[in-house]
Image 1 (cartoon, one colour):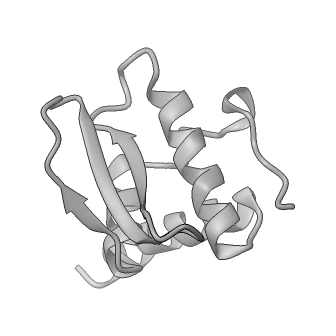
Image 2: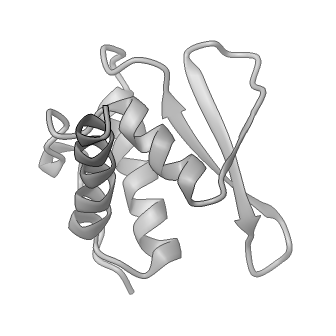
Image 3: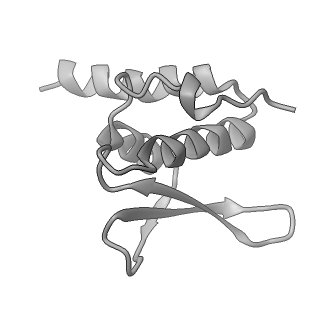
Length: 103
């Protein structure tokens, strides 16, 4: 089982929502419409029962539950990709560094 990170352990200053979105798009996740504009919902591959996996992000980091949603998303990606949460964070932040270098 992959070790999970807790919301209070997440260095949210390192993570930007746009970087997570870029990472998800680069890894085949599709944005799906959601009635709540405070949420950005993604759909990925199917789980073991054939149901599409959904991942939810806040649209801004300033919401009260933003850290919890981001942490949940990182833990979900870690479980799916069989990596640690820290490895996922590193991959997401590399996306940001790479995009800055190319501009």
